[in-house]
Amino acid sequence: MVSRQLLDAIRAGYALDWHGLHGIRHWARVYENGIRLAAETGARLPVVQLFAVFHDSRRLSEGRDDGHGPRGALLAEEFRGRYFDLADEDFALLTAACRRHTAAASDDDITVRVCFDADRLDLPRVGKVIDCNLLCTDAARRPEIIAWARGRSESDAEAGILSSWEE
Ligand SMILES: [Fe+2]
Ligand SMILES: [Fe+2]
Image (cartoon, rainbow, N blue to C red; front, top):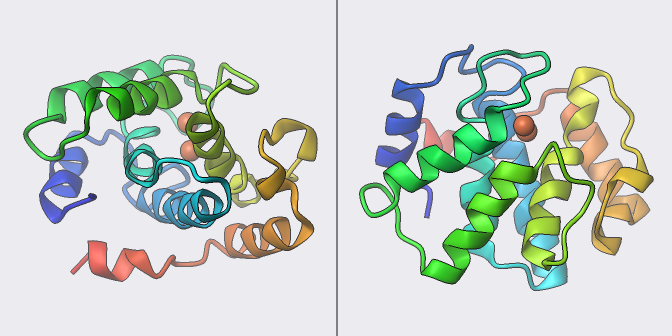
């Protein structure tokens, strides 16, 4: 679902440090978090995988950047059919998750909630504590999931997927 061509196209327009706080290393951990949460919740896996690489793809600042979610959703619209494909229903979930990932606390749809939590579980990398009140799935609130995510995030661990993405 996340191809070399898609990543190259995203990178070509990425404004910040590719290996920085909101770059590829974060996306790869969000991707892994999302796969694990999807397996436990039934969330739509392709949506969760694509969310990982689009949600912060159009950040213009490592600090507060209120418009970056909607800009990421627009990029997904631009790249759909060129670098990836999704059915209409899944695509609507992807763009909703990108658009709302910082503005919304939760969502009615489990796939969107898993996207939010996959991202929020990687907050320790910026010195923030994972707050269960900010998570929106029971799967993400499980102590072993939090411990697993916190350890990888705090150490800025390289997600396994990164090596295949960077080949
Ligand atoms: Fe973000
Ligand atoms: Fe993020």
